[in-house]
Length: 182
Image (cartoon, rainbow, N blue to C red; front, side, top):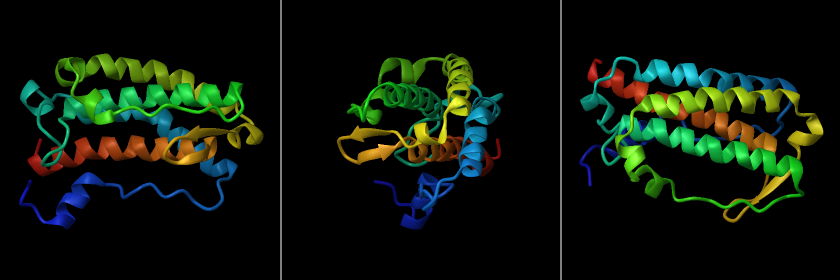
């Protein structure tokens, strides 16, 4: 275990704070969240620009994932979210299957493949996903999925979560770069 103070580890782990949805999620809030998702591929690409292999394989915090793993994790996570949105829009409160994010991050492709693979994937994925999100009605944002740990979750809440998730992981990399003087 690391010897860094707990508050420092907490700051490193949650550089933009924890996700907290507002009590009311209105159209302007959703629009702002969609804009974050639209910007994610460019923001992530900028965050990792000009990092050499050694820096890509540096953990963003003690006992944390490497920069490379973070990039691949975001692609994995957002692929899952996109599918969950599509399921919720075509089925009534579908049950969704969680996955072991930590185990996925340890698979060979997440540990060793070039970030460009997932950066390219994020560009295509977010183009499709945000097109879908812009077309959704207020009623559709009220549709739900059933998560085994969270219970019934609305799509507007999930949109906020993935907007936060985008900022959260970009900040992992940019704050590491800042701390290291990269």
